Length: 89
Image 1 (cartoon, rainbow, N blue to C red):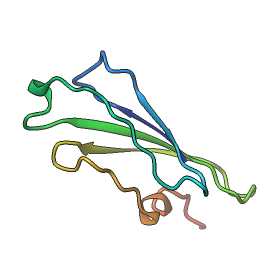
Image 2: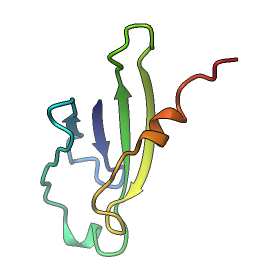
Image 3: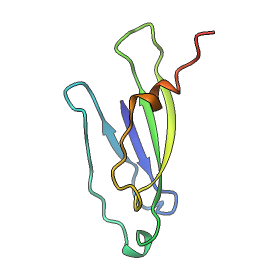
Image 4: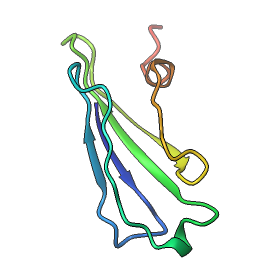
């Protein structure tokens, strides 16, 4: 899983990149945010690119929005990924 986090209200902050794999199930980065921008709300967009071990399953891309003041740790669960898979109609 490759992820990129951006903050629309803080365009000067470079996108934060993360890569998760079977041997690395969690990742983090520290970023300095001006206090005035993080006092009540810090909305961010997490763009995810999920590649599967099974070569017959195509990679998927989707985004999740999160307020990093309210929820400073974003947890991605299997249901969020499964909801993005094409239906088997």
